Length: 210
Ligand SMILES: Cc1cc2nc3c(=O)[nH]c(=O)nc-3n(C[C@H](O)[C@H](O)[C@H](O)COP(=O)(O)O)c2cc1C
Image 1 (cartoon, rainbow, N blue to C red):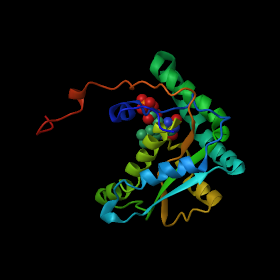
Image 2: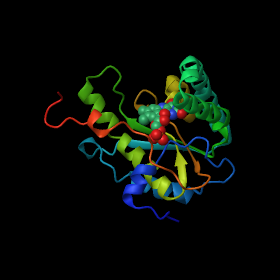
Image 3: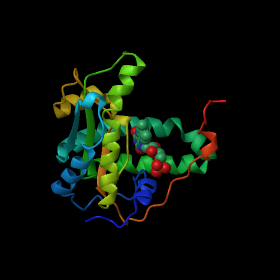
C-alpha cells in the first residue's frame, strides 16, 4: 500500500532512519521486489544495467554482517565522542548510530547494492561513471521503500570489510563492488520531516564558482 505523499513530500522526507525501524514486523518479499523494479528504472552508464542488489534476509548472514558493521560503527562513535560532548547534533547522530549498531542484526532486511567492475585506483571519470551506475538506483529503491512505509539508512561502515562481506555472501569481489549496506524495515510511524540543510546559496554556484 502506498502512503499518501506528494512527490515533493517523498523527496524531502526520505530520511536516514535508525531508531524508528520496526525490528519485529517482517517485510514481504513482494514489496521489496516492487521497490527493486522501480530502482531498475534509474540510469546506468551506456545502458549497461551492471547493477546488482544482494537482499539479505537470512538471520545468520545478518548477524555476521552486523558484526562487521558494528566494529566500524563503534570506532566511529568512539572517535567522535569528544566532539559529540560539545555538539548536540553530533551527540544525537552518535546515539542513533550506537542504537543501530546494537540492533543491526535484528533489522529484517539488509540490502547491498553492487555494481559490476572494480574501479580501485582508476581515474575519476571511470569511478564517477561506475558509482553513478548504482547509486541513483539504490536511492530510488529507498524512495520507493519510503512510499510503502519502509525506511532505512544509507550506510558504508561495512565497506571497511568489503572483502569479508563478499566472502560471506558469495559476491565475486574481484569483479563486483559493493556500494552500501542499507538496513531496511517498516518504520514506526510514517511521519517524517525534512532534514536540516544549509542555506541553498552556500552550495549553489550560478555560472561560476566564485
Ligand atoms: C555516502 C554515505 C555514507 C553513509 N554512511 C553511513 C554509515 O556508515 N552509518 C550510518 O549510520 N549512516 C551513514 N550515512 C547516513 C548519514 O549519516 C545520513 O545520510 C545523514 O545523517 C543525513 O541524514 P538525513 O538525511 O536524515 O538528514 C551515510 C550517508 C551517505 C550519503
